[in-house]
Image: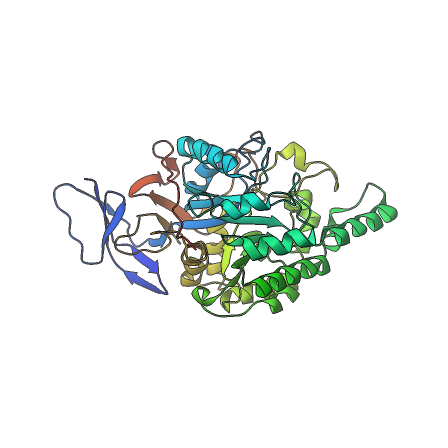
Length: 444
């Protein structure tokens, strides 16, 4: 029996901040408040640092199998725990794409050996794998990922009858990437006619426009309402799309929505300085969109904040507009970004925890995680709001080796990460090897 007692911490959980000790026995939280140590208990004094449930990132691309020159389950999950992210849900656009139960099983075998954080995987939808989708269960996958916009590999689902059938018959939550590909392709043609191949990166939010997002997301919401589908719309980027969603507690919703941390941080002005480093799909858009998205987080219209962590090599990102791939690495700096915005007065600590731990657990039915509760698994992030975290090449953990925040100093630090009752990250040092566990999802 292992016993760990965290003392003098400020616990942020379920809408409150309280000075409470936390006793962990083996992998579970035994007691919150009023705990006492015995001779076998390891006592850790947190000296007033804040204790959060470990973050659950519901959208990452860890690139394995097939694209491991960019990142791997081992490298990116290690970066995750260094940033206080203890669980992740990984996307299916690998090489080969994860579009059947055999692919899911193969990824789980890799993660069981190499993942530093807890893991779950999406089954990818295509125009031709409806029968596989109908057979998948919560034991196999966290949800069904539907690319309703152009994506990596043969995963664009653009057949109307197939989309209707997926929404009608999917046994798990449907998570969508919503952009209208025909509109994007036409915009690319217009940009090429104007600029040739030298299209400036500043055109990205015009090519992958707000209109293309709205057309697709409104279709997804309509399909879900007609079929009573449990729908989760990923990475919302525009103010206009917010009209499609309702405010309120996440547990009451059949249709939920996510925003990503970079769409809350950057706007189109940063293309001038960061260029293709912040090229992503859907595109980072206007400052007005960014402000509306942040307000929607606070108003409980947006339910989840995640990363869409998607590493590419610096060499790949150095290409011109059409040659540079979309996506950026974020999972190590995810919590730091939100804590910086907390210090700016944008988000409360309670709201950050709600959107990055409580709500992802609720949306996906993740068992015994996402809250600091007695009987729950002890996945915790300890943060110091008085410390500093400079981002340098020496402390970037992503395999790609770069970050859009290089040279920036965050005004907070992740000082400890606890995973399944074990301290796995402590003030810059990773302790031990991979210890991630497969997440369990409640049946639907």
